Length: 472
Picture 1 (cartoon, rainbow, N blue to C red):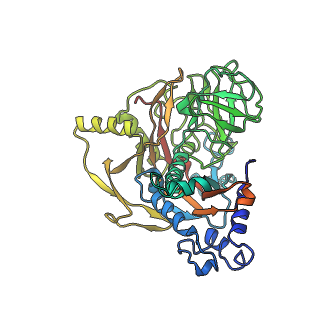
Picture 2: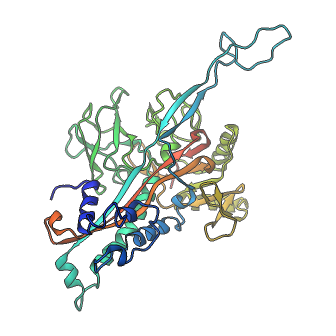
């Protein structure tokens, strides 16, 4: 059976549930998938004569609640309504400085002195569109019937539905925590212009629909034409991409130019000037700010001279000076660290480091924001976390790892965030759609699907800090 688009699937779901009489005009299906009443439980009366109503809203709400009640990064980022916008602007230049011939735009002026030269700021547009995450499942009509017999697993469709709901939660948080993937290419098993191989662990940071570029190890040039990921094998690390400018070879570096899914936390913490294998500087930028210069937008300053964020793919232990450097850099940019996120390995390393120096002070109630609202400390929406210098530390098992020049996985990255400028803009919370249209499927199968539409926004990249190249 050929792959089906989301629109085709939805159309079939409408048709299979009486889309004519109970379609868009009455809000029976479309309204309960994407309408304002998605929290309401559907009733038999609302679906007319259907004897087996589908609780579309109920299952979607269950997954959405699961996302917002897990102690993972997704829960720690405030959720906002998408709003009437597809982007915003970042100010990248406030005019000439003291080294300019015309002098700065802000300076002292004597009683009869000339006024500062008038200049305008430079702004760069940032465009953000909602990303759609989908998890599908299905069972055959025969297996559904047989599973209910003695010795079966019961309702096979319900079992698959529960398993897929967990997969959907895992996928969304996994996309949010995916590495920016400056990964060293291993020797492809089938060298070709469409074959890209990375360490298997690093391949989990790539998704179908991502666009990648390659840094050629032979001359340090960047090749960014083509490179649309079409298949990912997380067991072998081999990916298939549309034709790129060069045939990737061992020693080259592949990096993500744009994502098919959510922008990740690692993307918004990325800096220009990051050393790859100790030689090449990173060109990728999460927001495609083509005029961005090293250290202008990201809190790590110029990674070529600032060793805090990167270490050229050489592992090192987490230390207090590394972390304190992040505090200083963020505060110098006008922000304040409000949350630290790292992996379980780095969490234990940091815990042992602080306990040995008797610096592990207390626990705190992390306050979760939803729009302009904030929970009170101690309410169920928050959760208790250990702190360093009053900043909560959240361990997330999905945190991205760095990779050495020899393609070996290092430890988890260490993120220091000013969460006032981070948000998950939600177009549609998680919805559930069920499809029993045997004719459309050309098969006796029952299918279900979870849909979530949102995007991760960062309004101030210069207040987000990352420490990479750490030992496990």
